[in-house]
Image (cartoon, rainbow, N blue to C red; front, side):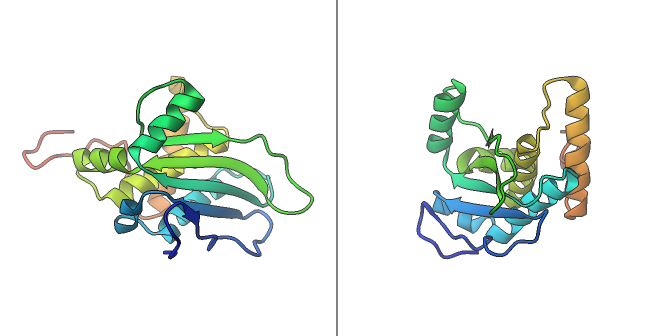
Length: 183
C-alpha cells in the first residue's frame, strides 16, 4: 500500500506498462479505507475486470477514488442529479487510444461508509465487498450495464467469473445466515 497523504495519488501502479495492460491510479481521500483494503488488491481487481472484457483497447488507465459518503454524495448530486450517497460511481470517458500513453477509461469512486455498512449487512469482509464494487465499476467503464434483465444477467455473470478468478465467492448467490435462513 502506498504511503501518500490523504487526497494524493500514490502513482505506484504507473510506469512502463505493456500494451493491453491497465494502469490504475489510486487516490486516497478517506484514510479509513487504509484499514480495510490495499492498493494492490483493488488495482488487481480493476485489472482482472479490464482483462475479462476481452476488448482490444490497448494500454489504458483509470482513476480509482477512495472517498467518504459526503464526497460521493456530492459527486452523485453534481454529475447524476441524485442527492444520495451510493456505494460506487463510474464515470466513463470516451477516450480514444493514444499514439503515446495509455487511453483514459474514466474514474471509479467508492464511498467508505456505504461500503462498510453494506459489507456488515452482507456478513462479509469490507475488502471483499470493495473488490466486487471495483470490478462492477470497471465493467461500467468498459460499456457494461444492468438496466435491462438480459444486460444485468450478462454483467452479473461476468462479475461472478472475475471474482471467482480472484478467489472470491459469488456475490449474487443466496447466502445462509446463522439461523439457516437465506439472505
